[in-house]
Length: 277
Image 1 (cartoon, rainbow, N blue to C red):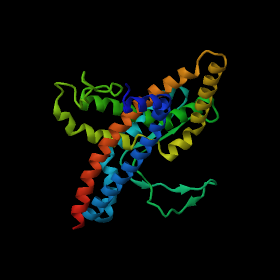
Image 2 (image 1 turned 180 degrees about the horizontal axis):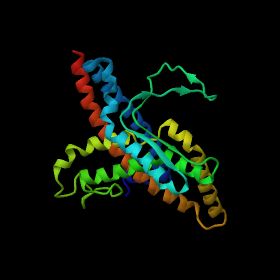
Image 3 (image 1 turned 90 degrees about the vertical axis):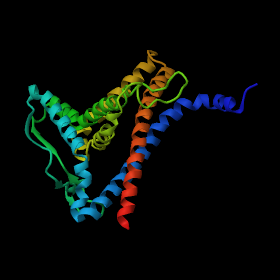
Image 4 (image 1 turned 180 degrees about the vertical axis):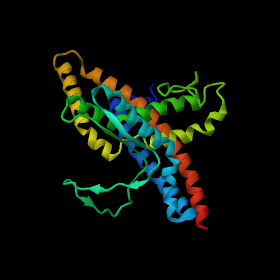
């Protein structure tokens, strides 16, 4: 006799891969919301303690992430040195406003929070060459790869597990730390994970320089998958299985970040409430 839970799982089984894939977007949206809420609390704490200058506290807290962000840009540019790329300046800690521009390049006034830029990498490269566009694209999205690599490393430092290994014991109980792993790594690793993931996403200026490369790469990838499917070199079930596997690992990483965000958000909210009184 099947239990109600078993029957429910049987009914959900055909839709489970799609639910796992959709969960990526849901968790990403939740993470954006918690990170935005955390920044608001940090801005409030900074303002109540230091006035207008306190609004920069969030940027200084993310200094390690900013350094990694800019170093990722710089490393990508250095890889294209044989193709005429040359770094002219690297800046880590010079805060300046980012001018918002419309589609015609004209400066706009924004009613929202002013965007600030904490670091910058400037470089020159030959004009009009194919490899120049490739280099621009890879340099633009480099923080995404650099931040992800740092997250994977810091997760191992904190827990002793690889990010792609879901840490369950033989009784299917979640183990946060590998048995025998030192506890002191949890003193600094969560903060570093927070800051490198806060600066992991390329800026709007980065995306602007990388859009040609990104859209071309995505188009070629989609066309290749369609060609493999059309000529029966790959099945729909195989594509779905691979997508589900990748999505499940992304979901696990997003869940870790969401738990960290919630922990930091609770602490920041308690401090902000205390400063209001």
